[in-house]
Length: 478
Image 1 (cartoon, rainbow, N blue to C red):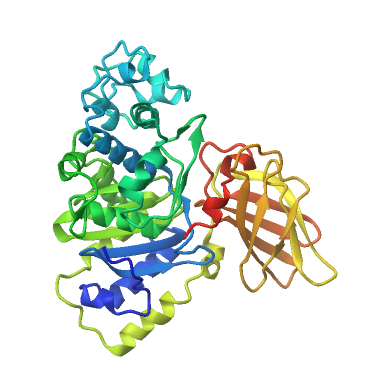
Image 2 (image 1 turned 180 degrees about the horizontal axis):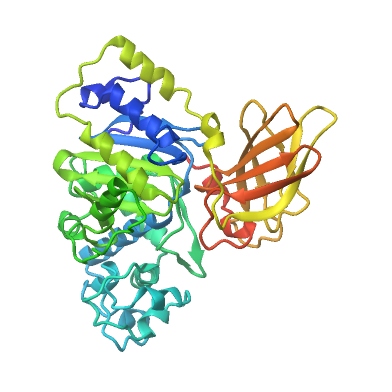
């Protein structure tokens, strides 16, 4: 796999059949120029590959192509591949009883395959009441016979991570390092842990290039060039629609978005991957995707932050629909227009289009101007950072890393990027981006006075700053 960059200054996209016009329309739609969506879809980064080559990539400041960020449930696919390695090495069978492996009761006959396909038989309401103990899912009576009822189930993936550790003696990431991460050129990465095991269901911090490299390997049937990374037989089985996840789409959605949702979240579920309109994908909360179309050898990896993920998916498919199989005929002017646009992408350029999440309200804070003229904002909106503050960039993003006090484990850092703008009335709009995650805080108010603060998208399983802190390896990831 060629991991060289093909950024906005390259015409590789045109040679691969993807026009500058299509990419410019793609950027506009993501940033919020598309009236169908009403606000920005908050794009962070995209890496597009075909035939194992990067044909176009872009990133919006303050994010970076080289820095890792939380990809939520896209992590699940890596847990699935670990199970595939375990099967190939004779450490387990997909029809094995995970209770036997873990030394726990499993009276309802749930198998590893049931866990992989989220077909444990439990209703969503039951799953939502479970805690994060190894025996919680296995010991809870399901409402349906295992293998007959799909319900999205992060507890199932957590049990799979426990199984990997039980049969290998290693945490998930340690086990994957020589088998998957090193062969794909993926550097040091970190997955959030639950006690002594990697979470498995969420918590991986990856770059958009990591997602693309993984997708390209899966598109090639488990191969990276001539080297088989993941057993091809497992990849073939992984992408089949083992579970029926079809259902009535949300009637409140726009017709086009509703159809997109049905085509991509109702097309079947495999071994910790979602079937799509074509192909399959890694899929994480708020829009962390690696969209894989093996038939066309296309991969679109994407990171962003929106609750309107169906809209993001619609924009991704519109780009793919615009993609031809012959080189795009373009003028030097068209190519140069894309180069200029892609080289200046910055989320601040559409900062007025962000809206706070309905449940995103945080405690208020204050900002003030120091004697040296620099603007400063308090971090009181983060529980555990009360009394701390950071400078605000007024013409560029200011990057800083905060040490979360009182944290006893290595995950004690909060990398932030901060930018603000004052209007003629002395009111200020400030964004605080947690760059190791999809999330940002929006703050507005008077300089010298109180500022209202709210999450744009609310971190999952969040209570305090400790819950989104990361170790040094994430801050320094390349």
